[in-house]
Length: 184
Image 1 (cartoon, rainbow, N blue to C red):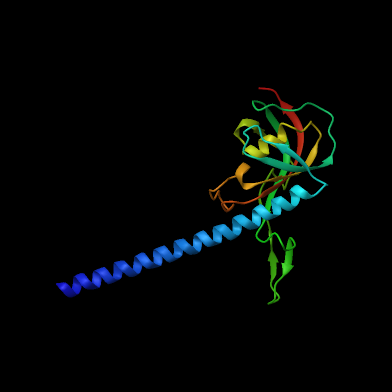
Image 2 (cartoon, helix red, strand yellow):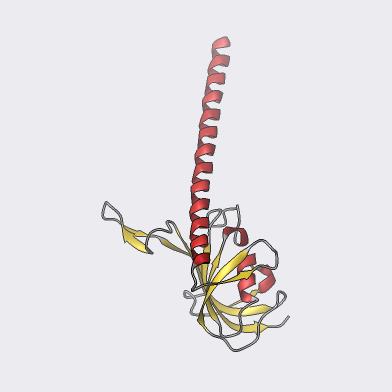
């Protein structure tokens, strides 16, 4: 009986050790990923081609570059909008969108995680209040007809939580065209 108990304790101890080691590795990966995403956002923040807008939530700011200038109405938090957009991030911010690794493999580094139908060519109707903080912040500062490239830090995106294919602590990039404001 003592042999079975000792064996059971050894197995449990081994399983616990594996669990704690894997937790430590996960935390290290999250820390490296978080730091890489914070670094790229800091670089964009220093780039004079981009402008800063603070979120009304006071949780930070987004960076944007105007690609096309608009002419019309600006939405408020309770409005809906018709937009075309593409959202993406990179697995490795130091590398190109696609590249060839040392073994000759072609790597897709730019991950498109969401878009309006047909990769941003057809519009989507969304309610501003139901969007992540950074996306809502951008929209509330755009005019109908504006097209922006918007960089959203993880605190104004999905935060510390993995969301679908988007890892926790991810800097998000969107190309957004505001087509129409729909008053609610």
